[in-house]
Each structure stands twice: as structure tokens, then as C-alpha cells.
Image (cartoon, rainbow, N blue to C red; front, side):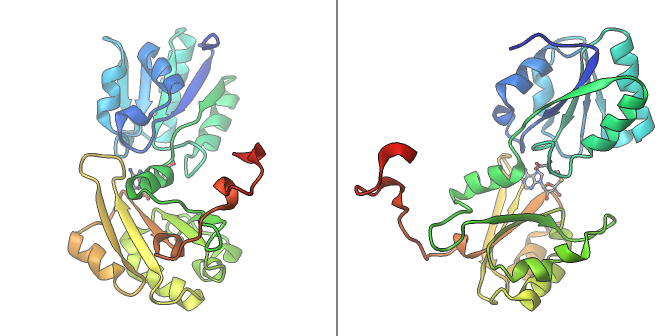
Length: 254
Ligand code: SAH
């Protein structure tokens, strides 16, 4: 691993839950960190067992942005290695940018270490591929509008027109509305849906149904957070072998 630059804050993707799904790079940083600010409501606290004795660990669930920044600044100014540990990968709903910009105002830079996003952890739990030859070759990652609005061109109805694979974050609490809007937008009622709660955690739960019955299943299971809604025929039975391992196909792309 290249040298660690303690003048910067390291944002590290913690992975979806299983402590073995952090990258080696993330693990090495966590092991050496002096200050760790972790997103306590989503990351697996067992990850903190990788930290050295005496590392200061702060749960950001109890902190506002200003307090998080103060901890980061204090750490960097005292020549400590500061790690900001966030769930999944940083590039999806990670709020890295606002933290980074505020750090920049204080003259502090940052580095990012990629993580395994929960939509990948969820697919692994299912043993499924979002891209299935001749069924779906695209994945839409989105969320339903909540306190954070979504742009009009990105409404669930509009995305549903594509009838491609979808991974919907931050929305399981509104599953009835999600299902209704996807149907209004064009997905047939019998489109397969899977809700994956706490993918890669020991208490992971997987619900399988269709746009017609998934809301009832979610309600019965009492799931209202830390879940992904996966939608599309990639979850169904239709399937075509890929040309990749076809005997006639050039080896160059395998
Ligand atoms: N950056 C994260 C997403 C943060 S937004 C990532 O890459 O995964 C938080 C949302 O992510 C949750 O509301 C839920 O929809 C999803 N999520 C995070 N961890 C999850 C997990 N282990 N299983 C299922 N969904 C998860």
C-alpha cells in the first residue's frame, strides 16, 4: 500500500455488513487509524474490532456535520490518521461531497477508498445477476423521493418504462407506493421483486414476490429500513446463455 498521508481524511467504504467485505485497503487503514468516525446506524460494529487498542471511535449517528468536521480537523491537526467509515460504497448516497467541501474550507484534503455497495451484496445473497442476456442489460439505481427530492425526469414511473433491472435504495418504508408507481409506469403486475433486508449480515432476510404482493410481504415481515428493493425480470425464470463461453465465440473477451 502506498504511504498514508495523515494530512488528509480517509473516507472508506465499509461494505454492506459482513466485516470480511471491506477491502484490504480499507482494512489496513482501519487497523492503523487513530480516529474513526463511523456511520453507526448502518455499518457493522464488528468492523471496529479491526481498530488498534486506543483508537478513538465516534458514532456519527449522534453528531451533526459541524461536530464531525471538528473531530476530523482536530485529528488531522494532531497528526492522527483519521478514517471516516461509511456504509457500502461512498459513491452512492454517501454525502462525501459536502464533507469534502467543508474540509477544503479548513484547508484539509481527503481520499476515498471504494467499498462493496449493498446492491452488490444483495445480488450476491440472491446469487443473481442484474444483467441477463436478452432479458436486461442495464441497471437503474435510484430511490423514491423522500426528504431529499428526486428530479422529475427521474421519477419511478419514468424509469419503469424501461422495464430493466432496478435497485431501489432508501425506500422500503414506502414499498406500497413504490410498487404502485412502478406499475403505473409500465412494469407488468407480475414483475418479480425481491426485498433484501440487511444483505450480508447474519440476520439477512430475503423476500421474493411480484409487484402485486411484495408490499404485503414487507408489511408482514415488519421491514422498514436497511433494505433494498430489487425489481425486474432478471429475478425471473427467463434466461439465455451468454455468448461469452459459447464455443464459437472469440476467447479474447473471457
Ligand atoms: N452507500 C451505501 C448506501 C447508503 S444509503 C451503499 O453503497 O450501499 C442507505 C440505504 O442503503 C439503506 O436505506 C438501504 O436501502 C441500503 N442498504 C445499506 N446497507 C444495506 C444492506 N446491508 N442490505 C440492504 N440494503 C442496504
